[in-house]
Image 1 (cartoon, rainbow, N blue to C red):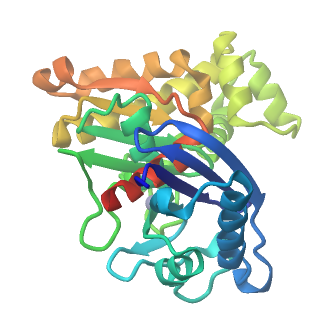
Image 2 (cartoon, rainbow, N blue to C red):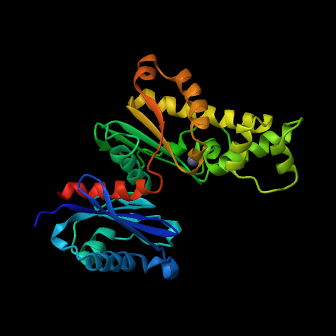
Image 3 (cartoon, rainbow, N blue to C red):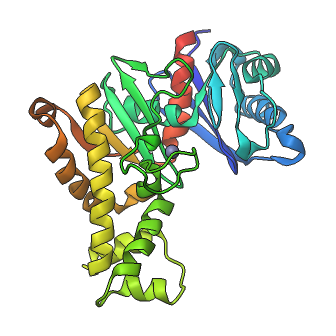
Length: 321
Ligand SMILES: [Zn+2]
């Protein structure tokens, strides 16, 4: 029988998402299980193997129709070994040889990449990237991640750090970042970064602002609240969003001047602010890009949401077709 199905696995700190796709990237079945990170994360791989095996059995899908499994994981991936290390939110302390373990457990070919690259490939292939071979993806969530597809290839670099857009320095000697540097994009444009900016701006702000009242009263403020208030013309919130949009537009302009992709796709929880955010970022972006880039590189919002990870992961398995 012809091999015509891909399996995608999106491994996260709280859930593991699975999908079975056609070779053209249409999702035919998807499911998820909780990530059991107890006992140094030693249950994760066996859980993945048994979940795939039992699902295929229940669907009565013959194993010889599966092209292979692709997986996106947190941490630093070693492509040669098919291994990952430094995936701390999974409680994995040692290097995990995922390809060997999952291949043996399922009998399928197995490809691996980090979760940011997987999501980038997903959006590039089946999402806002429209399968263009030159697409950059930036995700604004708790942190800021990124992935670069250039001339049809994911850019991984010599040590797996290619596409780490979140650590582009946008403010020399600025906010301290988790990476140890200061002034990284992530510290200004992630969900936590937006709130950090809001607190700093509120300290110096004098005037009428609901955002200021919320912060001064010690109420919980999220990036969503900041954006919602900015949409209602709250003066302080608008100031915060404008600054955040400046940082993102400024950083993405340098990325665009370097790579000249067809699209830079903005995803992640913060991007739920939608066109309101996109228009503001675009204004700064257009100011800093070369004219040739301005005419050919477009900023877009991501469209796949949570499915980007499994779709991109599955696409990694296309190499076995
Ligand atoms: Zn950093």
